[in-house]
Image (cartoon, rainbow, N blue to C red; front, side):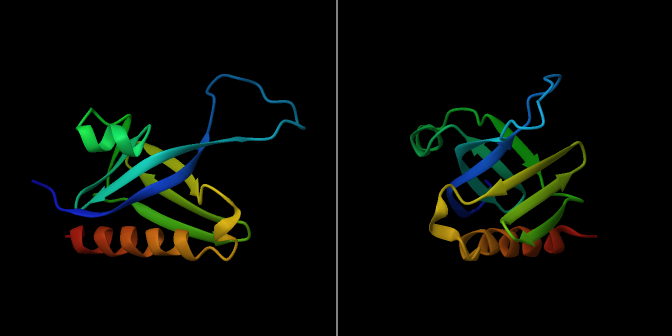
Length: 116
């Protein structure tokens, strides 16, 4: 079984495919529960869903993935073989980006460990 490394709430940018945004519309950030194991990042609707073992809403294989971190505003981007997601802290409590940087560092370390 994959080892649980860290978990917690993060806000993921909701990209509505095929929907045309007006230039003034604000992007939507959905607060979801993320679980990082030693091989994947899993996304659940809530901590409760993760706890009762339902299928994750999304999963991201970390093999050959890459992570980038922007400081202003603090945003983490994870790119995997077939996907790219943008994450940020779920509220304004992480204005300095410390929480998100912890996630970025953990993801980067795991990806490096998996490299051939």
